[in-house]
Image 1: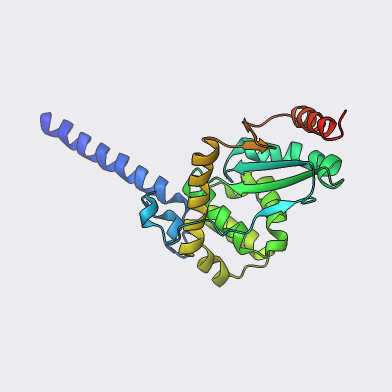
Image 2 (image 1 turned 90 degrees about the vertical axis):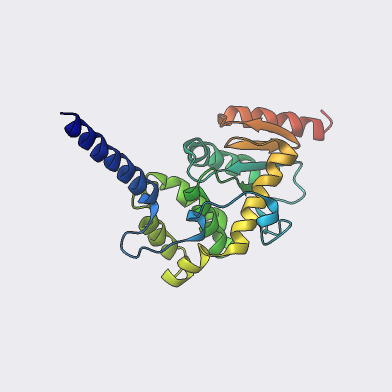
Length: 229
C-alpha cells in the first residue's frame, strides 16, 4: 500500500512538472521549434546589456509643436492597453491629434516575454507603419494571445511586410531587445512607472486606463491654460 502511494506521488509529480514545462513553452512555434532571444531568462542587470542608452526612434503621431503631449507606456499583452487603443485612442486621434492639439507618443513597457516579442516585431516593420501595426496587434490580441502565438504573430507580421527570415532575425536582435529593456528601466526610474497602461500628460503621470471623458477633461484644461482663458 505504501509503495502504491509513493508511485502515485511520483507520477503525479511528473505530471505537474510536465504540465509546467509545456505551459512555459506554449508560445513557441511547434512547427519550427525556433528558440528566440525574448524567450530566454535574462538578468535585468544593466551591465549585461549590449547598449548603454536608448536610441530607439520615437513612435509618435501629431504636431511636434502641439500644446499637449501624451506619452503612453503599454505592454502588448495588456488587456487594458488593448481597451484604450480600441475604444479611446481613435476618438483622441480624431478630436485632438489630427487637429494639431495633441502629440501622442507610444513607448513599450513589456511585462512578459510575449509582449517583448510583439514589441520587437512592431519595431522591425517599416517605421512608417509601426503605430498602425501596433493598433492592429491590439485589435487582434485575442487571436495571437494564445498557445499558437508565434505562428499567429508570424502571419500578422507577413501582412505588415516581414518575411519569415525577417521575423526570425527580428526576434533574435540582441541590440533591439536591450534597447527595449533599457527604455522600460528608464520609465521606472524617471516616472516610477510600474503598471500598464500608464500615461504622462504634459508631465503628469496617470496610471491605468481611463475613459475618453477623462482625457478630454485633462486636454481641455491644458488648452484653456495655453490659450490664457
